[in-house]
Image (tube, rainbow, N blue to C red; front, side, top):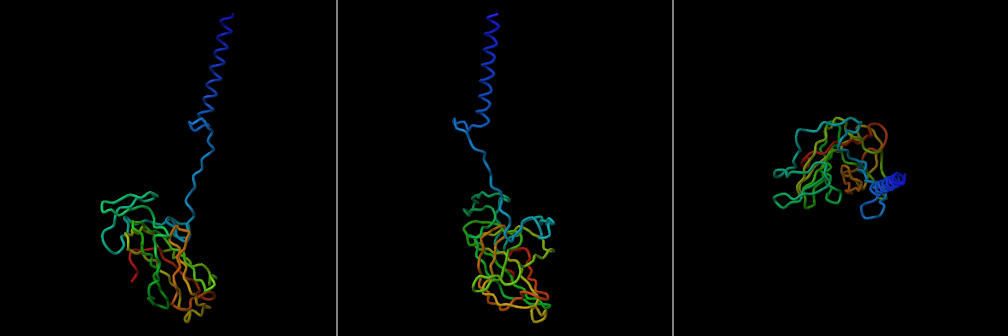
Length: 233
């Protein structure tokens, strides 16, 4: 009887030890301290750009390859990765271009069929190869920073492709609107075009020197296309 009691006591102690060990494994970090639940931040919502949709919620069709900006052959990039690698030429490559790595300009007007057409040009001013894909964000503002007119709309027929930019290379997106003298839209004259690169939150500011733009009334919509390689010239 005594042997049976001792056996039961040893079994109970063994179960308790296993339970304590299981709790330590589930809640600890191996250093003897309890770790709080870990959270991983997600990708911020696109600020004016979209790498996967055409503005209507419909997935866009990617081309069979990446467009390469005007210049030499494209360096390879790591699509979807936030890490950077070093190419054989010593140029660092990586993920999408961030606002701090880009400069923005607006090209000359190319009018036609009652439309005013301007290229929004982003140039890679960094020392690495990066990519842009999708639509820019854009807004006209006056000298006090007040937005003039509604947000531009996206041309739903545009197909987004990834544009690879080596240092110094450019990509452009179209900004177009009906000539206000023809459409009869109410106008205002902005001082600045605020441009947000695809999937970024921080904007770039470009001096606007092309005169009045439509802000309300008939045919007042300003439209944007996706980025393509080059400067649009």
